[in-house]
Amino acid sequence: MDRNAPLALEFLIPYYGDPRYLFEGIEAIQALEDTDWVLTIVEDRYPEGEAVEEKVAGLGDERIRYVRNERNLGVSANAHHCIQLAERDHFLVLGYDDKLMPNYGQVMSDVLRRHPDASFVQPRVEVIDENGTRINPLPDRIKQRMWPGPGEVVLSGERAVRSLLRGNWLYTPALCFERRALQRTRNRPDIDVCHDLAFVVDVLLEGGKLVVTTETCFSYRRHRSNYSTLVARSGARFDQERRYFADIGAELHRRGWRSAERAARLRPLSRLNAITQLPQALRSREGETIRSLLGHTFRA
Image (cartoon, rainbow, N blue to C red; front, top):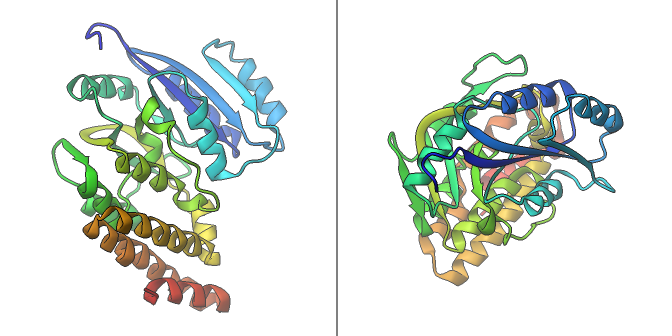
């Protein structure tokens, strides 16, 4: 990597949601410092997509491309589709409502010079709510406790997989990906709520390297009521998670990664998350959800 050249980054946004957040995110990308970037918005048949496309075209920025899927793919498949569309060596699959800080490109450039073989780079993030106010809710306090270290950390192999299966502390929309490693991953259907964990683990299984930085350069938006929360309340989230952990546990068993297999079988943070959903389900007397949450918590 030329030390004097700005980092060439590609951003892909699998889009289906509030246009207000999308355009805030575009403005944040346009404000990046010392970064050579292009952006592709991949709209998944959003009902008002044509109006959004016209507004994007009205920005007059040739670095921004807007494409529309022929049919609705869903969260997981559209994210995987974005990965396959990437053309530059390093790229991000952003949440449509997240925001880059101006220093994001500079941080990634510095890290990739030190670790040119990194498959992923995970920066620190700040968490914001739907109004852009900084918050620190329970899920993020738990992630902070599970963060792998106060300084820069390089993870690979069974150690990395075990760490993530014990509890997913990643903020995957902030991850900078190495294209060749990611485009070899498969799409695992019907696991929308943990598809991001799945493709990171798949790359690590193939010898990938995850670098965790100390610098904060990303604003991760956590809505009070978002897709993951709604799915969790229905119990479907945990059905998907349990299916994924069972599948990946079987793969780890065949590989002989016993400690990572045990982490998949125990899935402690996933069980804890199910427990935290129980009070709301009990108050609402949602019998099916209660049974699903109890099953996820106590079933082997």
